[in-house]
Structure formats: C-alpha cells, structure tokens
Length: 346
Image (cartoon, rainbow, N blue to C red; front, side, top):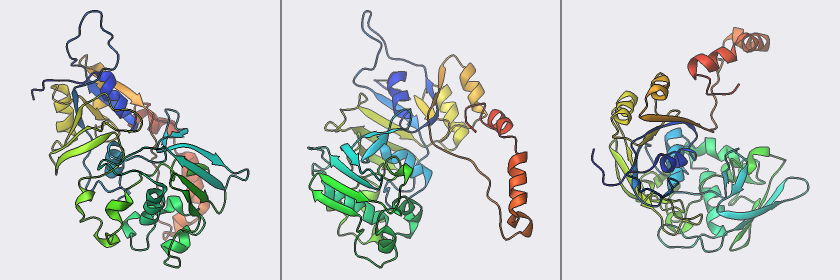
C-alpha cells in the first residue's frame, strides 16, 4: 500500500491511549528534516486495525467493537486520564454535593456537532433517556449505568415519561441526582457518548439501527466519518472545530483484514501503522512484535476484565463453598503470565 503521508509512531500510539490495551505500531517513519523536532506534528494519515462494529450508534450497542470505534466520533461529559481518573470533556467542570449523590455539570460553551449544530443540556438528557428507553432492549447493559439516577428505573420500566433525576438548569447546565452514592458515575455513566437530539428526536427507538446516522455518526468527537465500507474500511478526517483542539492527524483509515493473523501480517509488511492487541492482535504475536526491530510494542492503560461464570442451576456450583474453593485454587499470577505475557493485573 502506497501512501504519500505517514503518521509518526507518537501520533498513532496517542490514539491507542484512548482505546486501552496493548498497541503495536510499524516503525516506518516519514522523512525528517535536520534540526526539526521529532515530536508530534500536524498532518499525515494513519492506517490502523480495530475490529469493525455492526453499528456506530452507541445508544443501541453495548458490544466492544462499537465501544472501540465510537470515541473517534463522539464525546462524553467526562473522559479518562491516563490513570483513569475522570477529566473534563464536554463538561468543562462539575460540582458534587456533600453527600455524593448530586452532580452539576457545566457544559463547554461553543461546542458543535459535526453538522454545525450547538451542543446543549437538552442533548445530554435526551441521550441518557434514549439509552434508558423501555423499547431499547439492546442497550439494557448500558442502561444499567444510569440505574442509580433518581427515576431512571421507573422510566425504563415505562412507569414515567422522563428520568426525574436529570434536570436541565439552563442550556449549558445539567444536574443529576442519584439514589445512593455510586463511585463509577463520573467515569462510566458521565463518560457515555452524547448524541444530538435534533438528529434522533423523531426516530422511533425500534428504528434506530436502520437510521442513516447509525452508520454515519454525527457527534462532537475528534474525527468526522468520510466513508464506511462494511468489512473493508472506515475512513475519517480530523474535525477542525473539535472542542479539545484539532487532532494532529489529518486522516485515519481503519482496515478490516480477513482475520487477526492477516492484520498482523499487514503490520509486519508496513501496510498498517498500528493495531491494538486487546482489540485485535493475537496474544501469541506479542513476543514476535517485541522482537521485531520494525515494530514498536507499547502497553497502554485499559479497562477490561476476564472472569468465569458458573451455572448456578448445577447443584455443585450452587454451593458458594465450591465457588470460593475454585476461586482460592486459581493461580491468577500464572494465568496473567502465560495468557497475557504479564501485561495484566490481578
């Protein structure tokens, strides 16, 4: 694959940080000019591999492929820092009541969706109610993130016409009241992508998947979708009016190789600039990536977990003592070192 511009590894891996996991990048670099800093530069494109989703509508899909891809196009009220502490995104600031149950978010002024329409508090309330809507059966897993908001469960059960605990104070202020203290609220619930009310308000929930904007998202994220050819490529360009500053990359092309091994082979040949280990690279390729002088492997903080589920209909596993015994007998360190080459915590 011939490309006129290539991204630096720093540019490519910077976007890996937003997705978490282990990222590997081709070390083919653009020509450098003597005396010019080798730090991040504006321009160029990156060709990457992230597993492609069935939809780019974050309100109807809790699956990982959608979660990996939507940060390019959407933003939440908060976003995680490198240590996963919440930091401002669409919300420039927030306050928390002394009892930890009420959050007041102040939105950034001047934020625009990709179609030029302004972001307001209406979009926040609308998005959370869209996810929690009684007809949105696919998103039940996501809706659980909002279950501790006053009135959310009644709304999801069809017993209320709105989520009572989400109040619009003014066009740029949203107040949220919880039923009890919920530690992950700022990182998980407030981090959910905010969608434009003006695009979705007249679309029946059961018709969301078929709507064109589920394949061509209109968000506030750092990139704007150019094209999406299913199982082939997703092409996007930098959003000039992104509220956190325009991305250094001009364009990103996300390919969809036939399988993970094919993707890794493209990386080795230099046809890919980067791919994510957790998202797409077989763990067996990690050692090979580390030993290849043309590939840089870099761990990036990510949130994921692996666990065993027990069939409690089986009388043996219904006994909590058995489950505890199996838990105590599991060598988590050995699993961490053998399955994930030490790149995990337990």
